[in-house]
Image (tube, rainbow, N blue to C red; front, top):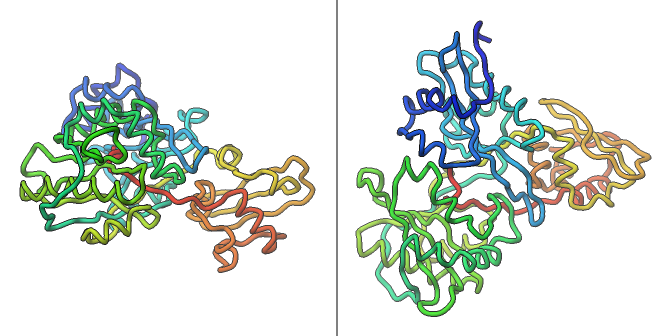
Length: 396
């Protein structure tokens, strides 16, 4: 580590230093904009008293599975002064964040693209691993058509947040992979700092055209013409299945066609409306981004996410991975010990309910000391694979 380097949590008096680093790298924020997120903290690096690196962290309650919620710290606008990059400052800030977030967050998380980039390799080196892969789907030539929707703006959407919450739960309540929705979530999300950096106009499409919303889509159109020629579907959901989702997507397409815009939205392997998007003519682009995680305390996280502790009641389960080893779970009447062995990514996936344990064991990706197929099945019941979805509304 560089002599004279100090990494610690930033406080309110450090905001000028945070923004000195951040704004030299990314589109600038004012102090008021940065402080508008009440859940923001930051890992800050000083070298000989001068600010040289910053990792802003937004603390979010995050759903891994239905009824399984963890505390996460989402990294964003990560940067080191240009002349001091590749000298270990970023890694030192991650280590500091792990220390000061102990007891406050279960995991570090980041939305990151560019799997062949230096930035992606930095996250791998610092202990993050991929748990879901995301891609954009693009409707390049949207057509005018009939959609049973009403079209409004941001305030119209915010006035109907209870309906949005109901529709979202119907579409995605069986999934994980997103910050927990609550009655005022959309107001908070659309005031996030990302929308200062990339300003846009919010459009709201509700199905049916009259009456209580049964489905909705939120679309963002950038206010800077140079940003994109696409209208981005930030989120859509339906309480009445595919029919409602189809109408709101057609509503976005109709609006975009009238203005010469393409339509894009985010998707992944488990998205419940992926086939609908394909049938509507959305084409899949190469994978574009992933959610990466780093557990801060694997043992505590395992206790929090275990779905069926009775399946492991007579087992003491340890884990082994290149990043480390330790206790994974101890049953109430533990008499036997087993050790789950796997790559860093597999253990991270298991801890985030993103691994089919039985399949991984069968294909020798995951091994178990003193284990068997029956033990793998019990572990699979305790840590079951959960479909994850991503909504671009949540990007930070």
